[in-house]
Length: 181
Image (tube, rainbow, N blue to C red):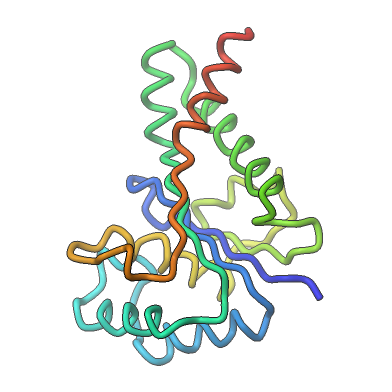
C-alpha cells in the first residue's frame, strides 16, 4: 500500500517546507483532528488566532499517527542571495534548489515512486520533477506543520516534529553548480 505524502510551503518568506506522510486513513485522521476539532481558518499558523493555535499544538502533542518534518530550505533566500552575488537569474537558482530538494527527499526515503504526493500551490513548481497533485488533506496538514514552528512562544522541542536544516547543503549544491560552469 502506498503512502500519502504532503508537502507545503504556505509562507515563501519563512522558507520552511512542511512534510507529512502516512496511509490514507492516517492522513484523514490527522486532518480530522487538526481541522475538524480546532477549525483553523488557514493553514498558516502565524496568522491564526491564538486559541486555535493552542488547540492544534495540543492535538500535535497528543500524537498523530503520521510522520512529520519541517525542512528549513529557504529557496527564495538562497535565490536572492546567490543571484545578487553572482548575477544569475533567480529562476535558475530556484530551479536548482528545488531539483536538489526533490533528489534529497528521494534519496533519504521521504518520498518514493509509489507515494501519492500532494503539494500546496506554492510548491506546484515541483510538478515537472515529481508525479503529484495540487491540494488535498495531506498538503493542508503539511502546511500546518510548516508554519507551527514560526509561531511565537512555541517550544519546537516539545513537538513530535522532526526539524531538518538543509539550507547549507542546498547552497553548497548551487555553489558547486555555479563553479562547474
